[in-house]
Amino acid sequence: MALLASFLLGAFSVTAHAGGPEPEEPGPIVLAQADRILGHWQRGQGEAIIEVKRDAGVYRGVIVWSQRRPEAVGTEVFRELRYDPRKQAWEGRAYSIDRGREVRIDIVAPGRDELELTAHVLIFKRRVGFKRVPSSEAAARRTEQGL
Image (cartoon, rainbow, N blue to C red; front, top):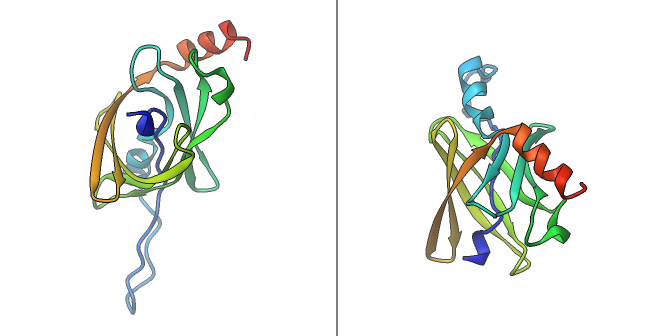
């Protein structure tokens, strides 16, 4: 369970067709889908809040608030996430603070304000859900914590 306590994020990638025409720029609908992951996310009450941003075409998730582990604030937990429009999912890596290692993850957005993350460790899979936290609420918590 601790392995997945701090996971999230996705990035956009375009697949080229060998020998075929150059891929077109992604349309606004694909970009809108890919950006659904942007914002603040929390696994459950009292858990860390992760902010997902797009940086240089890659989605990253950083802990911006944690009551139980304030020293973890600033830790990048979702890395190198890329959006696959065919799968309608983000794929990348997540860092486990407790174990000090990364695992492969997939993230889907079944609803506007929810994410479902699946971590892959060897032959095992673990699925956890995240709910969107309004930016104003995330900012208020950060202010309370003095961040």
